[in-house]
Image (cartoon, rainbow, N blue to C red; front, side, top):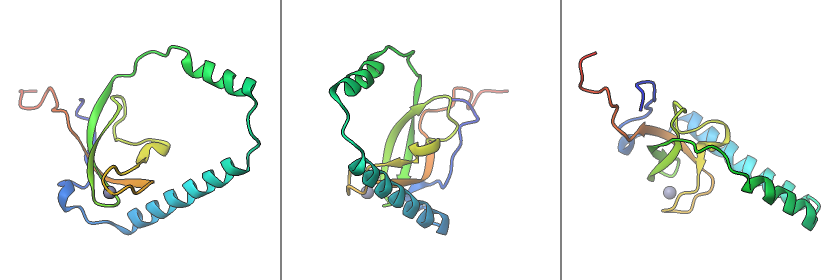
Length: 126
Ligand SMILES: [Zn+2]
């Protein structure tokens, strides 16, 4: 972990939801509903189209080194999530949401977070 990995809202157990969190959660719920609606309206894929997409997903990609974050979700539950090590926060774009394994809230906005792995430079003289 580099010293650039960020923390927000620690200690996670005592984090209080902000107005921005309530707004962000509502947006996530609205977007998920909109996406589900669009998918329901979309024409069915042909077997050929489906096979083309599956083939693309099977292509080997270089491995992405990941690190673990401890995150607090909108519902208050705390979980661990793996994200690419190059990210400075546990979310980028749409990855700021999780499905809560404890209460089932989906989507559940990540409202606070801390990197879990110790900084290899911590405690050493600069
Ligand atoms: Zn939950």
